[in-house]
Amino acid sequence: MPAQHTRRAVLSSSLALAGTGLLAAYAGRGAAADRASALSHPAPSGPAAPEGYVSPDGPEVAAAERRRGAGPLREVTLTATPSRLDLGGGRTVSSWAYGGALPGQEVRVTAGDTLALTLANHLPQSTSLHGHGLSLRNDMDGVPGLTQRAIEAGADFTYRFTVPRPGTHWLHPHSGVQLDRGLYAPLIVEDPREPLAYDREWVVVLDDWVDGVDGSTPDAVLRELTGGHGHSGHAMPAAPAAEEGDGGPPRMLRGATSELLGGNAGNVDYPYYLVNGRTAEDPSVYTARPGDRIRLRIINAGGDTAFRVALGGHRMTVTHTDGFPVRHATTDTLLLGMGERYDVLVTAEDGVFPLTALAEGKKASAMAVLRTGGGAAPGASVRPKELDGERVTADRLSPDASVALPAREPDRTVRFRLTGSMRAYDWAFDRKPYAPGRRHPVKAGERVRLEFHNQTAMWHPIHLHGHTFSLGGGARGARKDTAIVLPRHTLTVDLDADNPGLWMLHCHNLYHAEAGMMTVLGYLR
Image (cartoon, rainbow, N blue to C red; front, side, top):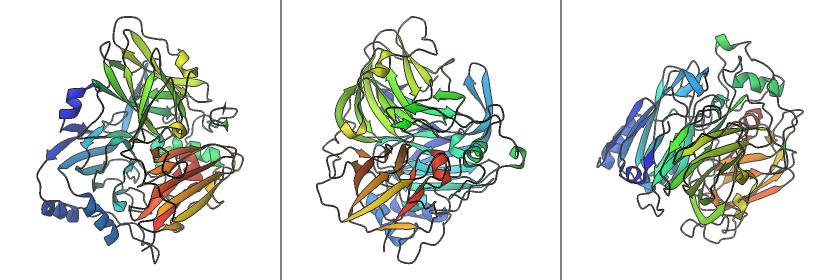
């Protein structure tokens, strides 16, 4: 059963379990104690920044963190470990997970807190941890070879940073294709002045699953897609000897198409699709009362799949995207690319209802169940009519006035061509596969415009670390950190360069990224 968050519990909670570790609140610790703790847990430094660029552990980064302040200390331990995972319906797989759970137990803090998140690596490979969507200090961003050294097998590392803003975020590795195992967990940052009124909260994590099914591994999938010639900018850890030669049946997907995605829907033929770690045949069930106002925090943690989401018998009110509030908009269904998050409100009807996540273009779906009364559970193949109803897209959302970027002309425009093809599997920016020493320069204080010109026949969910941007250029678009760029289309976004360091910019299709579609925005000194 998923965690049941009542409105009162959400507001009053100051403790939460995270993986196998306890989240302990140490309110009132002074700044001197915080600094001492930070000095005793230095970041595993990454490569030296090129001359003229801000280093991830440079004084500019420390100064930006001081400006964010240091609130009450929240300590969390996540343990990454090989695990046997129950996907429901008698299906168990051998994979990796945080604390042996899928998803990993959520981490829940309050905006302004100082989070000390220790990752204990019990895996047979090195790993890392990235806080997706957080505008955190650069040396805590969790990208091996760019902002830190990888955390070796048997070691641990504490990511320590101020959590500046509320929102729905998540945690995952930035090491090779480890994300396509079970290594992910929600990170929920509560608003101490929460303006929304609701009774309960349901965190919904969507995923596509291949690891451990008939011998398949994400590493084998990448080898198949690239013909064994993949480019891994992360210096992907070598597979354990026991997995060498393993790979299972072919997993390359052909013929998956979606009008919503402009053509090709994805590259990987996943055997299962999950909501909160369960298949539709044995779904996760959320219980509430008729009339309850429920906040759904929906996260797409998939590797290669966009999900179209609807709650049967209900309309949804969109309140946030990627953690930032928007002017409320009602809809029947939402489309989430990998890495995107949406918060919605629903008023629960009386009965049993499917929360269906259609694997867009892949002729499959995942499902969870909302139960507020008696009745039989919906079947695994149910397709609520809301999936084909009104759909609100991110470009049609407007930011809440409290988070809209101030109007300003850009000081700098950086243009990217999205290049590559399925045939060659040579995904990249500007035909140059990722190299950590290749930076696109920006300066602190600038309004920066990014233009993404997608020259491929494939859609790409583009994610920027450490920042959010305004869609569409100018200041009127919704604030996001991950956005879909359709084939043969251009996406323009504006951001304020207010978080110094070296920041990854990449496609959040995991296999596109590992084939080379990653690059870096670097702050000039």
